[in-house]
Image (cartoon, rainbow, N blue to C red):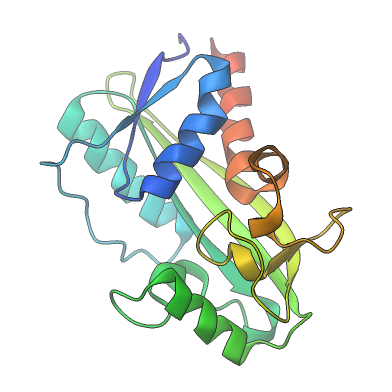
Length: 197
């Protein structure tokens, strides 16, 4: 199987489009935005993998091209894994990143353990291939929001490791890409594509 030169990304999130483009372009893979006339299925799966696969299948079927989709979120140990697959709508349907983050910070204690999870689905209907790649990043909840980079829960996520107590939103793009759940899932995808070519 040849490594694809481009992939359709099943998302309406401009932050994700930019991040995936940044992660894949050094490896010769361009990321194409999902055409506006394609409707994505509701994310009603019970797991990140289920939701990612639903979206990747829909994009691949509608475009007749290889497609990728991710479903990502944050799990708080103190909240028994919530918000999990409900991360994007934790504060309710249509909630903003700020509202979701405020809800998490009001419910989980500062310093408690967090985990970012990304399930990345790859679907190529022509080749009959469906694969899931998972990336995780462990950290802790900051006591206050800091940083202007990133999105979602990044301003309050302190990643494990030697990052000088900086939140994910204070790291450079390169630093974030090396350790993020999405960056790790993409590396799994790239390793598999290289081994399969």
